[in-house]
Length: 285
Image (tube, rainbow, N blue to C red):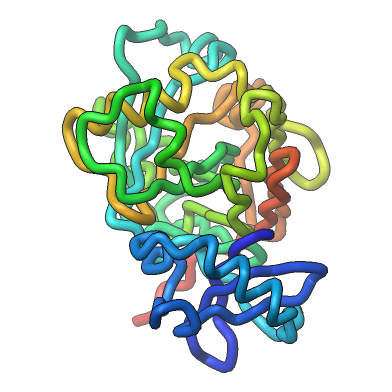
């Protein structure tokens, strides 16, 4: 079963999608009004049972996708976590993970537009796997980390390159509105036998730009979860975005940036395809 956040009849909802039909779970499981709340009250099993007994009735063409977790408490992103990406950026592998943060306001959703801001034309793609966490707390040991993963999804961690380079910190280039696409749905961790066997691929207008195995991560997911937990507690619905492979646009010759009308897809085997078009920001006076 796949969990989804969506807008239907002008209301934010969440549910389970099966055979292209959605079972609305909003308020049905101990009053949970969002996927984040469902994770917090630890009722995933009950939600699955409810959907099994209440087949979906909402069609996909009746909804608008929302970011999988629209309001995570924190979005922890990892930079330089594939060797080919480290090499193409002329960097070296560090002793510790490169960590930076996104804000929820920077997110957009499957089938919604990624926004190219008015101040830049260097909008770059970064296909990544997202990990959705439970209420794990602090000081998680690497050997215990996987049990705190609720599920996996796709993320396009689109970046405004020259803003990323304004300082040594990545933050400004990573937090423009409607640049971090998250979805289309969450596949439960229990349904993924071995995430390391999965392949991630980014396509721009149908052309493959990035392709890698999750086994190629420099800092593996348990290490990342444990490392972050030494500083801050993992809370229900927090998101870990695990890093992008080599092949990013700004390191190509000539550079390749996303422009209005483009279609970008991030696909992870056994998880799904996250698809977005590109539109320019409209400035209203």
